[in-house]
Amino acid sequence: MAPPVGDGSRRGAGAWIGMALGGAIVVWSARGAVQVLGGGLASLDPTSVLDGYEAFFFGDRLRSFLIWFAGGALLADLVVVPASAAAAGLVRRRVPGWAWPPVRTALLVTATLTLLASPMLLDLVDPRPNPTVRPRNTTTGWLGALVVVWVVTGLVVAVRRRGPRQAPGTLRGSKP
Amino acid sequence: MVHRAAPTAPSVTTTAGGGVAGRYGSSLHDTRNAALLGAALGIAFTTCFVTGLLSHQIQHPAEWFWWPNRPAGLYRVTQGLHVATGLASIPLLLAKLWVVAPRFWARPAVPDLATGLERLLLFPLVGGSLFLLATGAINTLQWYPWAFNFPKAHYAAAWITVGALIAHVGSKASVSWRTLRHGDPSGGGLTARAEPADRRWFLGGIAVAAGAVTVATVGQTLRPFRALSVLAPRDPEVGPQGFPVNRTAARAGITDEATGAGYRLRVTGRVGTPLSLTLADLQALPQRTATLPIACVEGWSASVTWTGVSLRDVLAAAEAEADHDLTIGSLQTRGNYATSTVTAHLAQDPDTLLALQVDGEALHPDHGYPVRLIAPNRPGVMQTKWVDQVVV
Image (cartoon, rainbow over all chains, first blue to last red; front, top):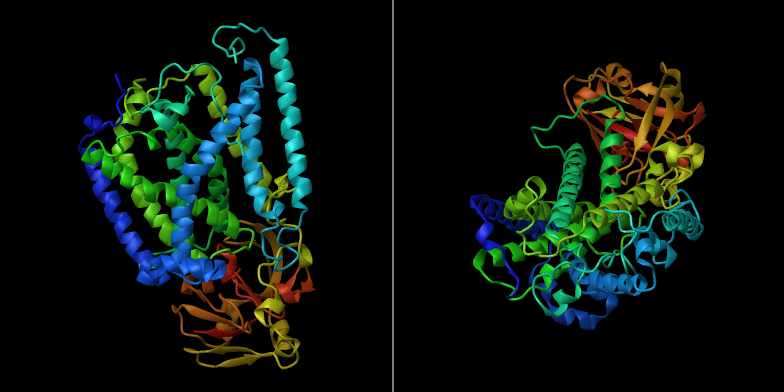
């Protein structure tokens, strides 16, 4: 039997009130965004992509907003999450079961710090407006942070390896 | 890039739907994880929303809004919390999206009207959440890879996201309550069941990631962490006279001529005696010293010892009418924030200064030489630099 795909039967009045109120705020706020950011139908003109990168991303405030708004959701759901899961799966197959939880934590911390540092690591950021902005060498700091993360992870893994493998209620005995 | 995990233990059950959804085989894709991460994100986003609204109201006050002069560092706390909470939400949000990913691929996509509406409202929720975190983080780098005005777009996206969040909480409250309170994980469409130990490791890992982001950045406002905050966009001790600058004199179009011998501070408007004061005139007035934070909307802050003239003394000398808000004008010729408003009650605070010195030295040009406004409990963008006008 196929598992359930919806849970509509569980919804009560609260769900409908929440969706009505929240939906109204979304519509009202989206209308406000269009008013504040300007633009209009021209923002949605798909042929603007033919005018080149600069014109497409920076030629219209509302279009720029929509690209960032929709682009984030699409990128996360269609690329980042599936790719992360696939990459984690690849690493997972090469790590013993008892070592995987701390390694997974280290991967998550590594990914988050790398994501945060990526505009600077990839040199995407505009030149500094003054020397007090981004005063540190990001690459050195990022590498240093990752060294700390992986050294600590190595210690945790070593402790887990020396501990009992089959302790009940733990994952030490889990097979890959 | 690896954000999170595949299973530690073999999957206990399948997740909703086949196809792509079936490839998310981890037992961690369960309702309890979704509910716990949802609750954490709900708290984090509410914190960001409330502190963000405060910052917006301080800068663009509604008629009903009132903001106290004290504690002097309150804005430093609320805005520091806003930025730190937003940054710490990044791993939370990515983990949440991964936990519920099987639902994204569930088919049919619209089995009934309620689910269809709920899924439709996930677009503003996910799009808005990612928009807020991404643009907020990028803005702290003073990098603007977009065409819109950041504060306006961030504000609009915040309301869109909160509306979608209210809808989501409404539709998921019952399922979340059952799983968190009564241990019934049957709702929500996620059919996997995580082992307790794996759940602890998974959620603990997310907490560690959120903590790592915080430690790596919070030193821009919490000085004890500054050595550890290797990814912070600012160091509160780096800058002319030992603290950072947002807009330099050069970028604001400030010339030596404007700040030289011809400089005058003009006090006009509803005053009995309009004033035109030279720098020497201001130096001859009674001086007051106060240690007040400079707290930027971008999340950095620093405590600085300022010396200057109490604004209320200048207003008294000009015989200004009481109970009026003031407009502070600047020599700045380029960029936003060339003027700011000082409320009548803030103008009467003795520590609201027309500052002339930092730590006993004349202000550095990038900090507003010859005169800058510094007042308690106020965003840095409203601490107007290169002040040349006070209009009552």
